[in-house]
Image (tube, rainbow, N blue to C red):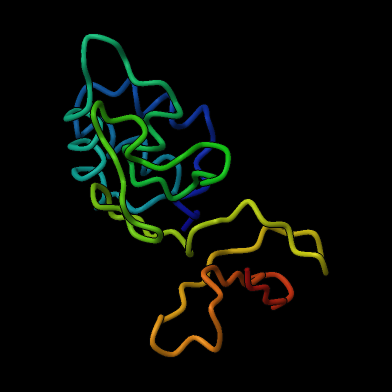
Length: 143
């Protein structure tokens, strides 16, 4: 089975053009994906359709954001009018979990983005407010 989060833009476009759950199931079958998700995908697409068709970025956001790049695309709440998000790792609107909040801190060791690693105020070793950890090489920094 193909990885569902790795949908090609052309396939997303075909899903947007689908007119029924049966058509979505047919597209999934032709793509070698699990047809049992057809109803769920159709409900997500049809519940968010308006007079204006969704863009491919909006489709990715409302479909759970599994293939979204948090740093460049923002979160799923970004396409919903009057939405906001107060979470650093899980979405309140969609079934998606981000791996901690990406920070604007670059790892001095490998150059990758470091992620905010929340520290319990009662057990933290010093007065550091922010503690960052690099998921790539494990380097830790505190500020």
